[in-house]
Image 1 (cartoon, rainbow over the protein chains, first blue to last red):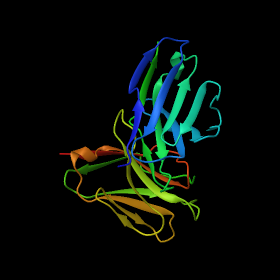
Image 2 (cartoon, each protein chain N blue to C red):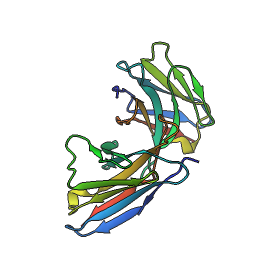
Image 3 (cartoon, rainbow over the protein chains, first blue to last red):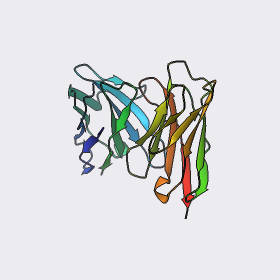
Length: 116
Length: 107
């Protein structure tokens, strides 16, 4: 159990385009999901907290208009990178917190974004 | 989140026990201690978590100091598949990752 999926697993896009990444909890409900990014040889950096049915909370320094987050259901959150540029190229990872187990958080496999 | 301090790297031989230490001296009473591990180009994998008492599961054991200012993740018999970056976090709610410990397992 406790499986989180992400789609796509990798994406290559041209500079200026927008890219949507989906995060799904497959076998549990998650009122809260988190989005991270990770650059090569670095740790995960928390970008935002996504709560079902409400606006996301962004960490300091993360542009909310650039990284649009939608959490429309208890099993799905999406991250849209708008007008992507090469510096947005990174490994994006989501995690989901089990509604019934507040202190258990499970991570997706990640999405590799490359912006040309 | 409480700040955690871990060694940058550790090495072990296959089939030997591994003790991965973590200091979290500013931990608050409601913070849980979490351990995750990550392989290259993969998302973090949950290992174990606990609050005050030692915890065991099929993957590892977690030994928590009585004052909760430190903890140790114990892999009882390391395998090559255990080579990864291990992250220790002390938090209630959102998880903020530090640099972790790179574990190398030698055959």
